[in-house]
Image 1 (tube, rainbow, N blue to C red):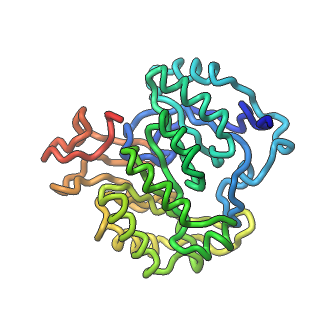
Image 2 (image 1 turned 60 degrees about the vertical axis):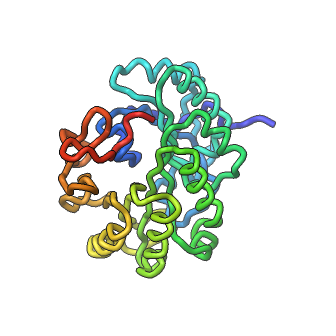
Length: 293
């Protein structure tokens, strides 16, 4: 069997790592981001459907870069810390991602994966030998949503998150809040409680605003709903952010111990003067961001 999408790129860019989003993994750094074509889910609300709900026949202009070429490009920019496999679902690109990640790891750079987390344990364990950080999209906290809106299941995603934490990988979670579909307050509270108990109170949670897209025409998420969910989440989790919408102060990192603002964010511009070189709070010494993975 041959992978038709091997080394086929729909997008390649040097991005701020905050764009992934990864807020507590080498904040303020640049990372070379790679995207392929396709996805293993069929989300009706996909926010990036032009490449994820497509196939190679739709991308006659797709670029081809071997793993060696990617490593060479990654090393060409001194500020770049490594590679992010992102834009579409990278697990459909498993062979290429694995080959590239090995070389990136060997070169002393970082590997990050932005994923829906719907992957079997065996290939995930193989990837984890070389990958350092993950942003996992936890779409909802009920099986019906996953089945009807994404054509998938919740339990494998939960197991992925637990496995990543068990192996001490840097994990951040994104939850796209969609009005009427996954905005039940009780269900959201259950999800937050599960994250705090199973993954830890320092797990970073990004609440993201949904916009009408692809096959779903529901109106965009109100800022009031996001702010309410933020308040619920911060009762159990130390680091919660609101993204995909500008609401003042909801992108900043405040130390969970002393309450001081240690990272200020304006879009993708950041000021992290409150973080030491070891990733700790300069005011009280609390460990906050990952600069060592």
